[in-house]
Image (cartoon, rainbow, N blue to C red):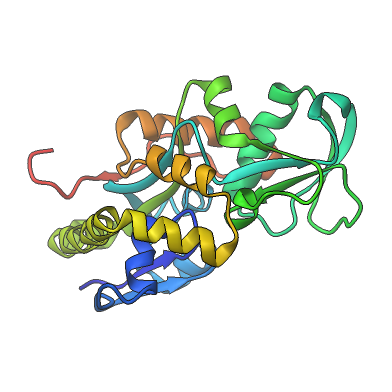
Length: 265
C-alpha cells in the first residue's frame, strides 16, 4: 500500500484506535504520528490524514481525497477555557499552548464574534491567563476551575458550516500516475472506521476511563462526527481559511485539487 501518515489524537480516534488497541494489524505503509504538520508531510511526500489548516499549506502540491475526512458539526474537540464566565471577560490575551493550527484558526474565527471578548493577543508561551484554547483530551476533561465552551459549536452557529478538523491528502503526482494506490488506501482507512463503529461502545468506555474524559461529551462528539469531505465540507474548509488567512499568514487556496476514489462518484 502507498505510504500514509496519520495524525494520532483523540479527534482521529475513529481511524487510529483499532490500531492503537491492537484490534487490527497496522496496514503496510501506514504510520501514526502524535502531531502531524504540513512541514512533515511535505518532507515525506506521502499521503497523510492531517489537520485541515495544515492541509492548506500543501494545497499547491497535494489533492484532497474526498472519501475520508474527520468532520464535526455541532460538538467538537476544540474548546475555550475561561477562568470566569466568558461574558465577564472584556479584554484578554488568549493562550494557545500547544494546540494545532486548526484549533488556532477556529479560535480566531469564533472567540471575539461569538463570546464578545476583545482579544488583545494570542500567545503560545503565557502562563497567566484568563482564557485558553484546549484541544483533544484537554477539551473533554472536566476543568478543575473555570468553564469550557465548545468552539466547534460556536463555529457552526456563526458560519452555518461544519468543521473539517482533518483532511486526507495525496501528492498530485500519485493521484495522476497511480490512482489505484490511493483507492486501496481509502479502502484500508474505511475498514478502520468500520471496526471502530462496530466496537464503539468499547472504544468510548476505554477512552473515557483511560484518559479521565467526560463520557457524555465524548459520546456526543463521536456521534456527531462524520467522515467524508463533501462539497459543503470543502466550502467550510475554504471559508475557515479565508477568515483567518491574514492573521495566520495562510496560503490562498482558491481551487484545490480534488480526488474521489469511489468510481462514478
